[in-house]
Length: 76
Image (tube, rainbow, N blue to C red; front, side):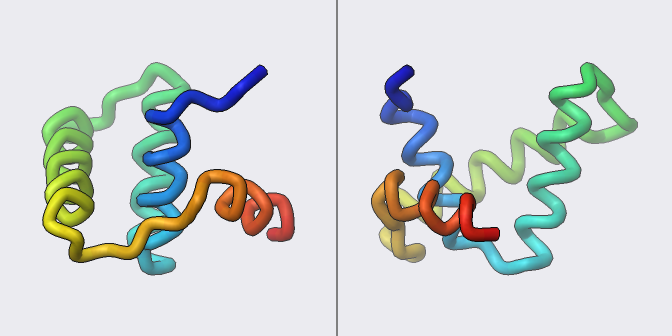
């Protein structure tokens, strides 16, 4: 199944995060996947998404190709 452009962009943005940010992001995604919404998660998730999108739009982070991200992810 082909990977959507939106997923590739998200993967690229994820690759630009620091280790601490990746950990925080993983916590948010895991909670969302489990259908839970710990207190404040919804608002925190929205802030994180908006912040990361603004960084991408402003050119403040370097994005990588989706296939390169997947290669790196598989190597972990």
